[in-house]
Amino acid sequence: GDTGKPCGVDYELKAFVAEAQDDKPHKRNSVRLAIRKIMYAPCKQGEQPSVEVSKEFMMSPNKLHLEASLDKELYHHGESIAVNVHIANNSNRTVKKIKVSVRQFADICLFSTAQYKCTVAEAESEVADPSQRENLGIIVQYKVKVKLCLGALGGDLVAELPFILMHPKPEE
Image 1 (cartoon, rainbow, N blue to C red):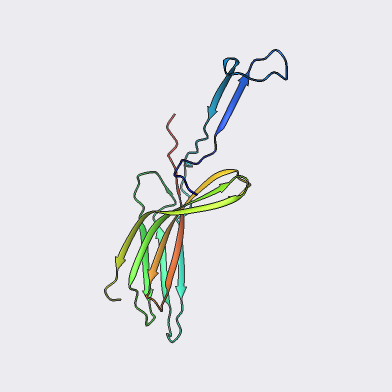
Image 2: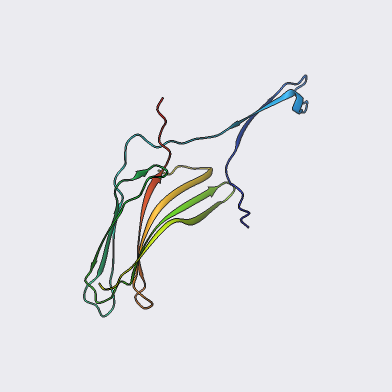
């Protein structure tokens, strides 16, 4: 059950003064310091995300081909994401709808690993005629998902583009 409360990993440093090593700490003789880990975006951009996928159909001599790309890999909060989509439909099927969505993936790696995903932005168009080491904590990733809807019998053609969303490093 999701209770809607924030989820995270908290670090706390606690120090106390005692006369003997086995004395219990009390509020009046201890101090606590909360520590928060902040990650900033790298200074240089990575490789531009791009993906190509194709789908073949029975009784159709040619394929439906989808190319999707982002204008860059790294975005800052509040910045627009430009998604470039190129469709080459050489099949005899009709693309009925194009959906583009931004999805957030959160991997919670504590005692066991669980993954949660949710759509954080989405655009839809009707078509009339043709680096991992061991991690503990919460790992958040983002992907742009491009989906071509071909109707009940045609199925869907899906492409995903991972990207980075981070705060810029503050100037010193």
